Image (cartoon, rainbow over all chains, first blue to last red; front, side):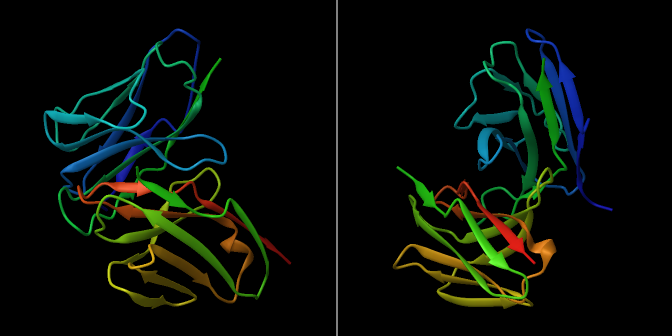
Length: 114
Length: 109
Protein backbone atom coordinates (compact mmCIF):
# COMPACT_ATOMS: atom_id res chain seq x y z
CA UNK A 1 0.00 0.00 0.00
CA UNK A 2 1.27 3.45 -0.87
CA UNK A 3 1.44 5.94 1.93
CA UNK A 4 3.40 8.22 4.17
CA UNK A 5 4.70 7.18 7.56
CA UNK A 6 5.99 9.09 10.53
CA UNK A 7 7.65 7.72 13.59
CA UNK A 8 7.35 7.70 16.46
CA UNK A 9 3.72 8.64 17.22
CA UNK A 10 4.69 10.14 20.59
CA UNK A 11 8.10 11.49 21.55
CA UNK A 12 9.38 12.88 24.81
CA UNK A 13 12.63 14.77 25.16
CA UNK A 14 14.41 16.81 27.76
CA UNK A 15 14.88 20.51 27.20
CA UNK A 16 18.14 21.28 25.41
CA UNK A 17 18.28 18.04 23.43
CA UNK A 18 18.04 17.83 19.66
CA UNK A 19 15.50 15.36 18.32
CA UNK A 20 14.91 14.01 14.81
CA UNK A 21 11.45 13.14 13.49
CA UNK A 22 11.22 10.60 10.72
CA UNK A 23 9.08 10.90 7.56
CA UNK A 24 9.02 8.35 4.75
CA UNK A 25 6.78 8.11 1.68
CA UNK A 26 6.40 5.53 -1.07
CA UNK A 27 4.00 7.56 -3.22
CA UNK A 28 6.80 8.62 -5.58
CA UNK A 29 6.07 12.27 -4.80
CA UNK A 30 8.69 14.90 -5.54
CA UNK A 31 7.50 17.38 -2.92
CA UNK A 32 7.56 16.89 0.85
CA UNK A 33 6.53 19.23 3.64
CA UNK A 34 6.81 19.64 7.39
CA UNK A 35 4.10 21.42 9.36
CA UNK A 36 3.68 22.30 12.98
CA UNK A 37 0.25 22.42 14.61
CA UNK A 38 -0.42 23.85 18.05
CA UNK A 39 -3.68 23.20 19.96
CA UNK A 40 -6.65 24.85 18.26
CA UNK A 41 -4.44 26.23 15.50
CA UNK A 42 -4.04 25.65 11.79
CA UNK A 43 -0.99 24.28 9.99
CA UNK A 44 2.20 26.31 9.88
CA UNK A 45 4.85 25.43 7.31
CA UNK A 46 8.33 24.73 8.70
CA UNK A 47 10.27 23.50 5.64
CA UNK A 48 9.49 22.05 2.25
CA UNK A 49 11.40 20.28 -0.49
CA UNK A 50 10.42 19.97 -4.13
CA UNK A 51 13.36 17.87 -5.25
CA UNK A 52 16.12 15.75 -3.78
CA UNK A 53 19.04 17.69 -2.27
CA UNK A 54 17.04 20.93 -2.20
CA UNK A 55 14.74 22.43 0.40
CA UNK A 56 13.26 25.81 1.31
CA UNK A 57 12.36 27.52 4.57
CA UNK A 58 8.72 27.94 5.39
CA UNK A 59 7.13 30.48 7.69
CA UNK A 60 8.60 29.19 10.97
CA UNK A 61 11.95 27.56 10.10
CA UNK A 62 13.96 29.00 13.00
CA UNK A 63 15.17 26.26 15.35
CA UNK A 64 14.55 23.47 12.84
CA UNK A 65 16.67 21.74 10.19
CA UNK A 66 15.94 19.21 7.45
CA UNK A 67 17.68 17.09 4.84
CA UNK A 68 16.48 15.51 1.60
CA UNK A 69 19.09 12.97 0.55
CA UNK A 70 16.53 10.53 -0.84
CA UNK A 71 13.24 11.11 -2.61
CA UNK A 72 11.43 8.93 -0.07
CA UNK A 73 12.75 10.53 3.10
CA UNK A 74 12.53 14.01 4.66
CA UNK A 75 13.64 13.96 8.31
CA UNK A 76 13.11 16.99 10.55
CA UNK A 77 15.47 17.88 13.40
CA UNK A 78 14.12 20.00 16.20
CA UNK A 79 17.13 21.72 17.70
CA UNK A 80 17.67 23.18 21.14
CA UNK A 81 17.38 26.62 19.52
CA UNK A 82 13.63 26.11 19.04
CA UNK A 83 12.09 28.06 21.92
CA UNK A 84 8.82 26.19 22.24
CA UNK A 85 9.12 22.80 20.52
CA UNK A 86 6.18 21.01 22.16
CA UNK A 87 3.64 20.55 19.35
CA UNK A 88 2.06 18.16 16.87
CA UNK A 89 4.28 17.70 13.79
CA UNK A 90 2.82 16.65 10.47
CA UNK A 91 4.70 15.54 7.38
CA UNK A 92 3.05 15.65 3.96
CA UNK A 93 3.93 14.84 0.37
CA UNK A 94 2.53 15.77 -3.03
CA UNK A 95 3.29 16.50 -6.65
CA UNK A 96 5.59 19.47 -7.22
CA UNK A 97 4.77 22.40 -9.47
CA UNK A 98 1.31 21.28 -10.47
CA UNK A 99 -1.95 23.16 -10.20
CA UNK A 100 -3.65 20.18 -8.56
CA UNK A 101 -1.33 19.79 -5.58
CA UNK A 102 -3.25 17.74 -3.06
CA UNK A 103 -1.07 16.96 -0.07
CA UNK A 104 -1.12 13.57 1.61
CA UNK A 105 -0.36 13.51 5.31
CA UNK A 106 1.37 11.11 7.64
CA UNK A 107 -0.20 10.28 11.03
CA UNK A 108 1.87 12.90 12.84
CA UNK A 109 4.33 12.92 15.74
CA UNK A 110 3.38 14.54 19.02
CA UNK A 111 6.55 15.94 20.57
CA UNK A 112 6.64 16.88 24.23
CA UNK A 113 9.69 18.59 25.65
CA UNK A 114 9.97 18.26 29.41
CA UNK B 1 0.01 39.49 2.24
CA UNK B 2 -1.84 36.22 1.93
CA UNK B 3 -4.80 35.56 4.15
CA UNK B 4 -7.46 32.90 4.61
CA UNK B 5 -10.33 33.40 7.03
CA UNK B 6 -12.63 30.78 8.52
CA UNK B 7 -14.85 30.86 11.62
CA UNK B 8 -13.06 29.44 14.62
CA UNK B 9 -15.87 27.22 15.85
CA UNK B 10 -19.40 26.20 14.85
CA UNK B 11 -22.05 24.08 16.54
CA UNK B 12 -24.78 22.10 14.80
CA UNK B 13 -27.30 19.40 15.57
CA UNK B 14 -27.16 15.79 14.42
CA UNK B 15 -29.19 15.34 11.24
CA UNK B 16 -29.06 19.04 10.34
CA UNK B 17 -27.13 20.97 7.65
CA UNK B 18 -24.15 23.24 8.29
CA UNK B 19 -22.22 25.59 6.01
CA UNK B 20 -18.59 26.46 6.77
CA UNK B 21 -17.34 29.57 5.00
CA UNK B 22 -13.84 30.43 3.83
CA UNK B 23 -12.68 33.73 2.35
CA UNK B 24 -9.24 34.20 0.88
CA UNK B 25 -6.81 36.78 -0.44
CA UNK B 26 -3.78 35.16 -2.06
CA UNK B 27 -1.14 35.92 -4.65
CA UNK B 28 -2.60 33.92 -7.47
CA UNK B 29 -5.09 31.10 -7.37
CA UNK B 30 -4.71 27.53 -8.55
CA UNK B 31 -7.53 25.91 -6.65
CA UNK B 32 -9.02 25.55 -3.20
CA UNK B 33 -8.95 22.45 -1.01
CA UNK B 34 -11.03 21.37 1.96
CA UNK B 35 -9.62 18.90 4.45
CA UNK B 36 -11.15 17.22 7.49
CA UNK B 37 -9.06 16.70 10.62
CA UNK B 38 -10.22 14.71 13.63
CA UNK B 39 -8.55 15.59 16.92
CA UNK B 40 -5.04 14.20 17.16
CA UNK B 41 -5.10 12.83 13.63
CA UNK B 42 -3.81 13.87 10.22
CA UNK B 43 -5.90 15.98 7.82
CA UNK B 44 -7.68 14.02 5.10
CA UNK B 45 -8.73 15.37 1.71
CA UNK B 46 -12.41 16.22 1.19
CA UNK B 47 -12.72 18.32 -1.95
CA UNK B 48 -11.02 20.49 -4.57
CA UNK B 49 -12.52 23.42 -6.49
CA UNK B 50 -10.77 25.33 -9.23
CA UNK B 51 -13.77 26.53 -11.28
CA UNK B 52 -16.74 28.51 -9.99
CA UNK B 53 -19.69 26.49 -8.87
CA UNK B 54 -20.76 23.63 -6.69
CA UNK B 55 -19.06 20.24 -6.43
CA UNK B 56 -21.14 17.55 -4.74
CA UNK B 57 -19.76 14.41 -3.18
CA UNK B 58 -22.27 12.46 -1.14
CA UNK B 59 -23.25 14.35 2.02
CA UNK B 60 -20.52 16.93 1.40
CA UNK B 61 -20.57 19.74 -1.18
CA UNK B 62 -18.11 22.55 -1.81
CA UNK B 63 -18.76 25.84 -3.57
CA UNK B 64 -16.34 28.36 -5.06
CA UNK B 65 -16.65 31.94 -6.28
CA UNK B 66 -13.29 33.16 -7.56
CA UNK B 67 -14.49 36.71 -8.16
CA UNK B 68 -15.52 37.00 -4.51
CA UNK B 69 -12.59 35.05 -3.07
CA UNK B 70 -15.09 32.84 -1.30
CA UNK B 71 -15.80 29.18 -0.75
CA UNK B 72 -18.03 27.15 1.49
CA UNK B 73 -18.25 23.54 2.57
CA UNK B 74 -21.78 22.23 3.05
CA UNK B 75 -22.36 19.19 5.22
CA UNK B 76 -25.80 17.54 5.11
CA UNK B 77 -27.45 14.96 7.36
CA UNK B 78 -24.87 15.59 10.03
CA UNK B 79 -23.56 12.63 11.97
CA UNK B 80 -21.66 12.59 15.25
CA UNK B 81 -18.56 11.39 13.40
CA UNK B 82 -18.55 14.70 11.49
CA UNK B 83 -17.30 16.40 14.65
CA UNK B 84 -13.86 17.54 13.52
CA UNK B 85 -11.92 20.55 12.32
CA UNK B 86 -12.35 21.59 8.69
CA UNK B 87 -9.37 23.23 7.01
CA UNK B 88 -9.55 25.46 3.95
CA UNK B 89 -6.35 25.74 1.85
CA UNK B 90 -5.63 27.73 -1.32
CA UNK B 91 -3.01 26.85 -3.92
CA UNK B 92 -1.24 30.10 -4.79
CA UNK B 93 0.70 31.26 -7.86
CA UNK B 94 3.71 29.14 -6.78
CA UNK B 95 1.54 26.05 -6.30
CA UNK B 96 2.06 26.28 -2.54
CA UNK B 97 -0.85 25.59 -0.21
CA UNK B 98 -1.82 28.48 2.06
CA UNK B 99 -3.78 27.15 5.04
CA UNK B 100 -6.59 28.67 7.04
CA UNK B 101 -6.64 28.15 10.81
CA UNK B 102 -9.50 25.68 10.55
CA UNK B 103 -13.09 25.58 11.82
CA UNK B 104 -13.88 23.29 14.72
CA UNK B 105 -17.32 21.77 14.16
CA UNK B 106 -19.18 20.45 17.21
CA UNK B 107 -22.16 18.19 16.60
CA UNK B 108 -24.76 17.86 19.35
CA UNK B 109 -27.31 15.03 19.61
